[in-house]
Length: 301
Ligand code: NDP
Image (cartoon, rainbow, N blue to C red; front, side, top):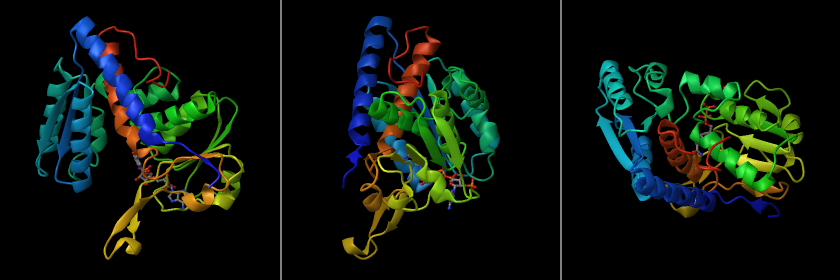
């Protein structure tokens, strides 16, 4: 391997430590404890794992954590009523509705019912619009994590060619928008893109957010490119024993790390940044709503 490893696990621990320091300061100086409320509807095992880690890390940085676990058959009206209650609760600075919601609930309706100032996932249409027009907004956590890693590695991103593979509303599009706001020349590729390999080969920065195991190969990359692998895919790992699995990204790490200048591993790259950025966003939301200075280096500004 010749590429520099971008260690998201360490970086995320540092972000959480910075958040904890800031939380301790506003507790002491302003008597304010940031609060994050998470709403989980149903029994999705992956969502339950995420919500448990979110709770643990929220408490670890000194914030209040409020959990609302609702049964699978909760009505849309009841979920909206809880969101409204959290919107009006001054102890709650951030609201996260864990996705996916059960099929009988309209996700967009629920997300757009969240007070945009408390929308720490950054999915509310107002925050999407603010980000799209280069204004101060709540920025989706995983994209914000990618931006932090890239800024840390490159210093400035201005003028670099970035290719984002994937155009989802929660990952691909907001990452592309953030890179554009940082003056990259941005291409968004997707399943209909022609000659994807050639498109990727023109990139100084490649962000892979596809959901297909090890799809992007080393020989698709420009020598020295920076590769941010957002993908989290579980594949069989018979070498570890029968029925065992392992996690891989959307990039073929073995070949890519021989060509790239820097690369995030999976696991231990972008993944840990998501919760760290959720906590950073909750702190930012708390500071903004109380007229306090925002934490430096923990936002997209
Ligand atoms: P989606 O399924 O919503 O979007 C995938 C995107 O990839 C789509 O835009 C799709 O194109 C595009 N795509 C699919 N196949 C190809 C292909 N063969 N060539 C080019 N483009 C293709 O996924 P998400 O954005 O939600 O997630 C992407 C990955 O990131 C997943 O592995 C997910 O697990 C991971 N993830 C990781 C997070 C973290 O914390 N690290 C957080 C969120 C997601 P089209 O629009 O044309 O269909």
